[in-house]
Length: 106
Image 1 (tube, rainbow, N blue to C red):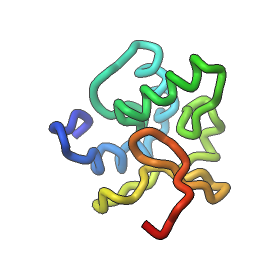
Image 2 (spheres, helix red, strand yellow):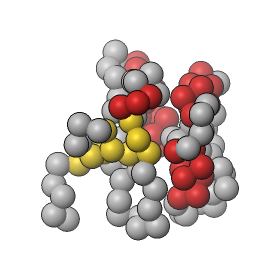
Image 3 (tube, rainbow, N blue to C red):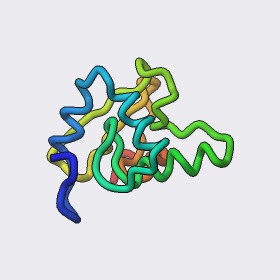
Image 4 (cartoon, helix red, strand yellow):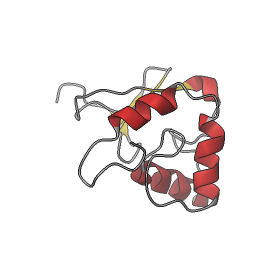
């Protein structure tokens, strides 16, 4: 479940992570130990890469687990077009790279 096959969405893993009490610690472990595969702390490989890149640039990525845990909610869906995370301030972010989605009419 946490290491989905190539090309498949990790929907079930993200659903489990959403309710996990150690989600932030798990994501931080993966970021600190360069875990390249699987879902860790509700973040996919691409999302962890984007978080690490933002940190190197001195920025805080929208999906960064260092943000307040209460301000980030992970959403899961069987619809691959929906994003995996939404900031409670009504901003929606891409599930793969965490970039903000501005056009909701696609």
